[in-house]
Length: 115
Length: 112
Image (cartoon, rainbow over all chains, first blue to last red; front, side):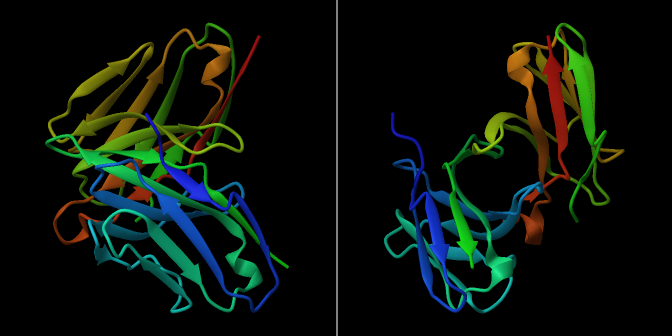
């Protein structure tokens, strides 16, 4: 079946531009995570949704970062006034509850380069 | 709160075994293991829950010692396809249950 998809796969933005990154989770997956992965580092948690509710956004690095999932399916991560330190791969993962924990399925990521 | 993994990097010859450790300074609810190949997304390997269980997946298995807040991933008779960066991931439950932290990563290279 279809996995998690993300678009665009690559994005080059000039400093100060706004960007929007899209995530299409696996159908039926209630939970959705966004992560930021800098080169050579592990993914860092940004935010978490359960259906349309954003239950945790403590990992968002600044108020320039905003995420939404209005209908509980597709999610968008928006970054306003991009800065060079925002350059990273942004990963989206949707998850299924196993009864005791959840397994996360990752999309291919969006590589953002801010010049 | 980020779990610490050791070693940072390891090089193996095909057929050799390896152990990757993951330690947390906080009590864990569960430990997940992922493998990420260069330029690709992390791929789920397994979850271990509280209770000190051990699980296996092909020739890859893991254990979880909740008392020591540690997990170990065991790779036996390594294959070339095992190369990649391995991350443990932890969730803490309770108020922090919605957050998920990946470890520092271990780069594994299997050579012929």
